[in-house]
Length: 84
Image (cartoon, rainbow, N blue to C red; front, top):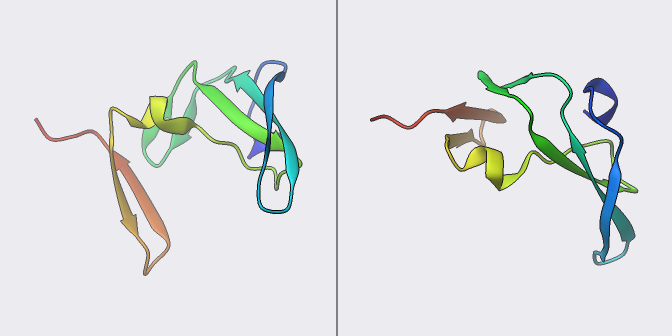
């Protein structure tokens, strides 16, 4: 996803270590709205690490207002507004 979204210039916000890798953590702001599983994210902060596999993390700040339904059998994710 990293190469497919328009975002601000990455800002280094820290570093970390996993079991076998040291990495740098960067933060960016989406430049345009992005549709994610039927929900539109606007002005969202995204995180990514380097080295990585070009994935981004939209994080819990975005997801806190939604319900996530995971279908492991079919490899599907649904993000929806909670029922009132």
